[in-house]
Amino acid sequence: MLTVTKSAAAHLKGLLEENRSREDHVVRLTAKGEANFQVVLSNKEPWDKVVKVKGEEVLVIDEGTRDLLEGMELDFIDTPEGSGLSLSLKEGS
Image (cartoon, one colour):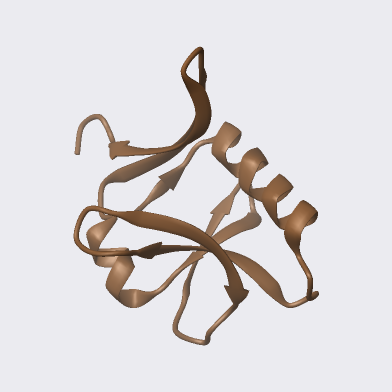
């Protein structure tokens, strides 16, 4: 299962609050090929896997993407080169 850090969860929540045009929109992490992923706003589908941090829904993932993210960690990083979401293999996986 994908792990989402507190900093990534806060960033995703902010994205949703700033960009939501419809009340039923959610943040979705989706695969674009085998090694590329993107974050989009979309509607929640019945087959989506909901990812929660401290009981709060922060992200949904479709079935196909879920398998690709097994053992991964989504984090938000802020470096001199820039800031953004980072996806990496979780330690111990």
